[in-house]
Length: 237
Image 1 (cartoon, rainbow, N blue to C red):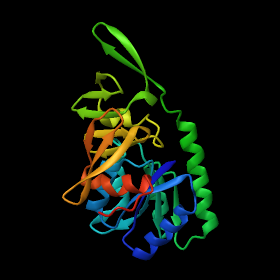
Image 2: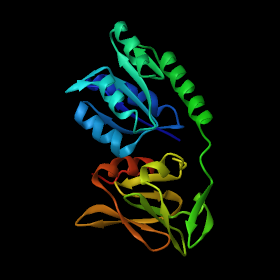
Image 3: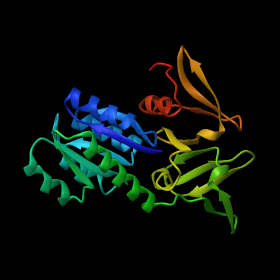
Image 4: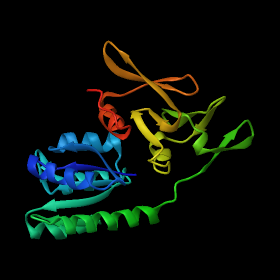
């Protein structure tokens, strides 16, 4: 499944893009935003594979935001605009494409298919992780990872019966984990949904995940909605 975000200050435009994305089972919309500040925060937190973004949004320029975040995000950009003169600006930052409003469903679906092919070619996701430990190297299957905790430039790799300390950032490892299995649920935590046992509540809010190895991992507020969407749940904000 490929993750994307929609950024547009027009509600009707966001609704249409959402509808078109929802029609494709291999795509998952993880968030929407209408302003520069909100979009920046969501992009940094959720790190989607694709961003559909209007050229002009509340509080700034979509192109400026993409230019700022491109060096630190592995996100593909598709710009939407009602003005053809903005198209060349989009390609100056190596955007994948642009949608000139009004666009038809066929044009949008063609862009989705092009993005899908590019994402496939940019893979594959890593299946084996080499972890240096006590003078040797341990090889761990990424599919055996229950969850990952980030702590600066180090990671705690939690498996069923053992935890490994690995020198790498959470942001970096997230780039090559399979997004259909791994999802960030906190600024400092990624889980493997195949090891998710239960979601527990605190004061009426679903706030903690119980993993198969008995660990409990808290859900960051920003990550609640996309996590529940990925799991096909509607259990409130």
